[in-house]
Length: 239
Image: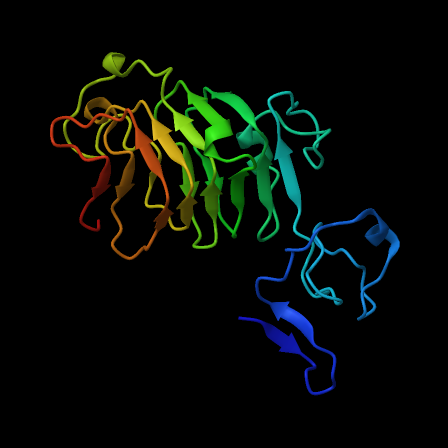
């Protein structure tokens, strides 16, 4: 649904709806203004229609690339970071985001990247072309606000030596706890998990808090094995 402002005065500036940030940027728009006097392009992508919603804060975007450098600022594709962790560490204002460009990324970190404040990490080319190759098992990311999200990434545990881990048959109580995340409070969408073994790594997703309502859409689990009755998605009683 669209929401308008100043409709009675005949100036229908869109406040919300699918037309915001949904147009196609053209070269001539760079120096032009919209009918309501604002810049023709706000927030990187033009709105559909003749006006541009002016009240939105500019959402800062950081980029990650296989050829990136964590010493750079990450604010453009040319100055992209090399790791998601480094890009997420730069997020400060609400609704900022990290765009992960197409490629394979090796992740040796034992710490999850943490998303709160409506932050998001998005695989630009989708999960089929944006792969995280994981070596150190453990929680990969933490979603700490309902508006936070992870989209379009494949988490591949192909470099993990599961048999070297201490074997524990209790859900979420061993060395690993969860393969992907525990108690996610946001959205996990269009992602994939591959080559995970639950008997040593416990559930891929572990939900212990009955007060949260995570949203998980269109996610695939490939070559993931569950043993000792440990489920891929573990829902426990609230602590």
